[in-house]
Length: 231
Image 1 (cartoon, rainbow, N blue to C red):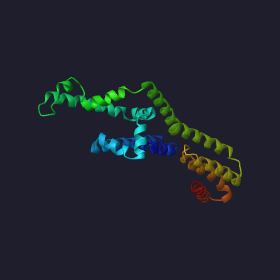
Image 2: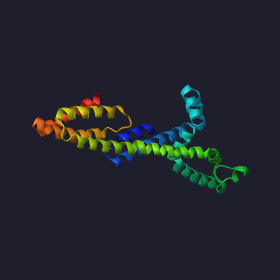
Image 3: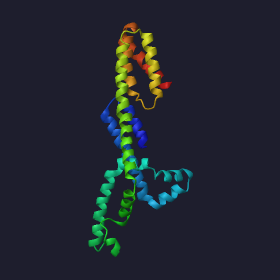
Image 4: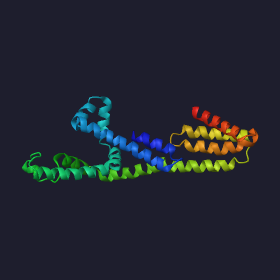
């Protein structure tokens, strides 16, 4: 779901960057909330046992030890984990000083965190942090290239193409734009919105005089862009 959100955000980045950020935030938030709800309803042990009972689940459990996944978790969930630790401190303090809460053993009273939070923190502290942080940097670079860099380069390229085709006949302009559009639509990392926007600029301006009417040029451009999408 998170990767789909990145792809969708890259697709609309050429049109509106703020909308891209909203799509990314909502996608990752939905992924995190879904995971937390599953764990809260069924419990960590039940989820782990359920995953271990299927081949795909076993592969997913093995992937949990990957530094790449740990890097993604650090990027996405570190604020929530810090909040969780803070709530754990409050919970542990209430258990120590309020008689109406869970009774703690002498060993558990020595800890600032709850037993579960302490276990999670020890697991995180045992990570290979050099490897994890390096992968966080690479993921950040990949995100920039996918969601920002590719969209901006595509927009600049289409602007250059518009300038180059300004004095070219309509048939040649349409053919060149069609070939460039097919290539861009076949490349999943290139957003599609700039192609439509450039079609509205390049083809409409080139077709208005030969077709004799602005709206005829608009209909012609819509037909070309629609056929591009259907190829």
